[in-house]
Image 1 (cartoon, rainbow, N blue to C red):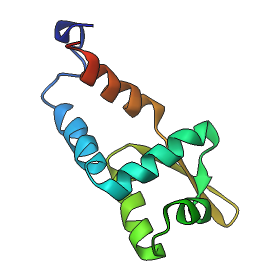
Image 2: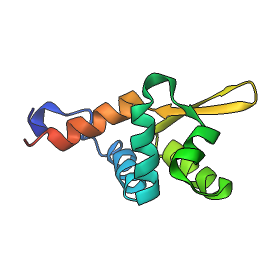
Image 3: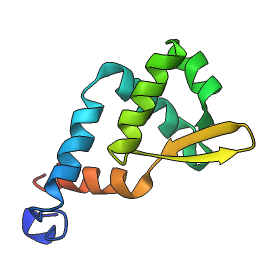
Length: 103
């Protein structure tokens, strides 16, 4: 795929969205969270599962989850008393398309 084939992704008004996503993934803990949630597929995982896998305090985890959600990398759903997080497939596909456009 060539850059010319990515007109919707390369618009000046959409580039800040992708910049924010790449910036969010530039933190080691956030990247660990993202990779863990990729392995969980479309069902995702609740905060307790993520915490036990990553091993960081609640407040720190909450901060990182919010940063990933704000960067549109994660989607969240409340199910009873639990909040489940999962990878946003659209944003992930867009980022992969951007990264592979020149290859």
